[in-house]
Image (cartoon, rainbow, N blue to C red; front, side, top):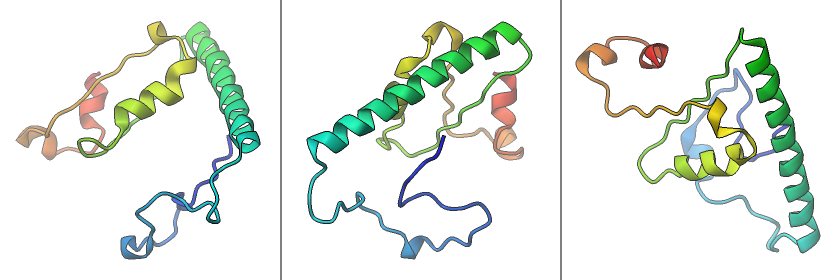
Length: 118
């Protein structure tokens, strides 16, 4: 799945947050045309169908799983992202866990230590 985004940073690249845009991506002063929106929706639908197929393969094989970590502050849009992106997969094959502020014990371990128990 190729992702195009002005916010995407290549692995290993040096990051200076002060040099990154904080607002929405500009569309050369014009809003997306209806044809572009339909094309984007078709691409999203295609990716959702592929995710649904891959979910079936993972479930049938019973050897591997997929961990998706969304981290953000309150009101960062994590719930909306989950609803929008994962609307094409079977919710019975998904487990969602949320974590609050780490306890002192959790803070002494790596970032994904809490996820291992889930």
